[in-house]
Image 1 (cartoon, rainbow, N blue to C red):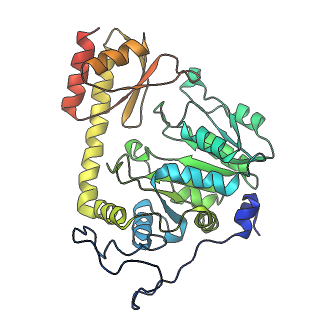
Image 2 (cartoon, rainbow, N blue to C red):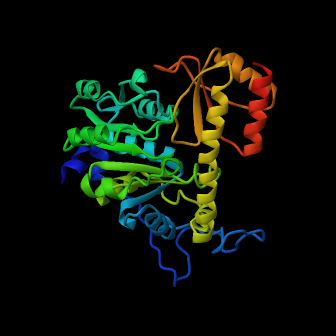
Image 3 (cartoon, rainbow, N blue to C red):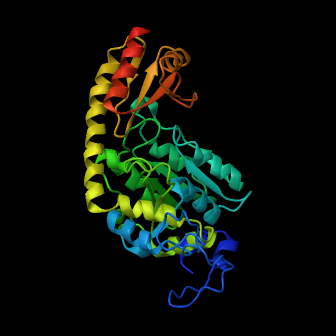
Length: 353
């Protein structure tokens, strides 16, 4: 057993992934399925059949898209399921711990608590651009920390983490902890994290999603990119048949070259809007700070978060009021919409200034 597998929960170490026979040339009289597809069947292959245990075609296409091998990909129902699976694989309830750096995606905390893990929080350094506090993270580390979760670009602050700081923590975690890098917004920063990290550091797992840049939030599809050993552990905790044929078909369509070209143009448009809207927001008297962003949203510090979001809502726009996490007192997150939506929001906020 390698040191990576030894970090997993005992039940996961000794268990195995669900198995079922799959032989396309034989009649399917083994899975308790109905032999007729619905008349309104919208998917190739028939929705009366269970999908494959794991979506092989999509796994291969996502591997190509992210620049890794198929054995290094586990398709998940959004990257949120990836977080949940990692907790369930590595954190024994009432025994193990995970460490993350708020302000960050709140599900990092919630999935850990659901699993019964101790969640250690080391805040980002708000006074230094929400950067990682590497000395404090090392000081808070303990032998029971099985997961270190880092997010770059970070949600909700929008900034990239210093690669040198990430590398220092990854090296510190070697033979002790699995490092989870959440790259949900990587495309908006011109990045493609995955292959390089995995090749050099087998204890790193990278989370990716098609919800953001590919515009498929309603499909619920993401991926864990990791070494084969971690992917095998993920198979042991994932539900079988969990990814639907309809969703697989949709994502495969989105990953066709012609559709990816359209996606790239839309990402470029969002980046243009990010710069334009940030400059316009900075002109508003109720806005105190517009934080630099490498995502498809902008974080603002405002005079009154409640008043700011209420004014936007009364004008027909829903913004995200950020809870008062460390360094985010009176902050609001604004997602970048289509240019006409952004212009409408700016007009509403200017009129209520």
